[in-house]
Image 1 (tube, one colour):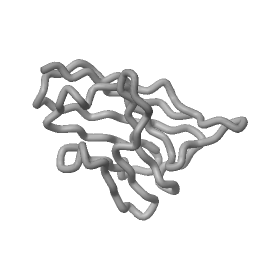
Image 2 (cartoon, rainbow, N blue to C red; image 1 turned 180 degrees about the vertical axis):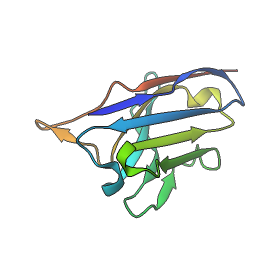
Image 3 (cartoon, one colour; image 1 turned 30 degrees about the vertical axis):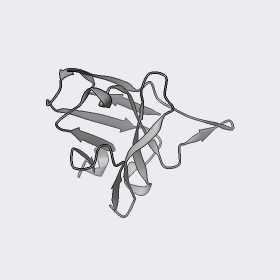
Length: 119
């Protein structure tokens, strides 16, 4: 199970930090990512952190977003720090493994957390 939180409504230029708590998935042992789904668009991977702590970002968020793991593995949490937010960053944000967890033959997704950036 994956539980995202921390979303909200902010103005352009502001910051938010999203959190993802996992149960039954050891986030420090897998490649993990934050995905975003904007209205009318497909879900896209915007930030990835491998089990070896290699990071990668979509071009649209490079320099503004940072993905990181909680240092205390017992908390089993991953964060997405988002700065200088833009209206185009709006959407529902999900965390998941990369590739996504599959349950009964389908990709499993948590409920996500909504981010709305107003101009």
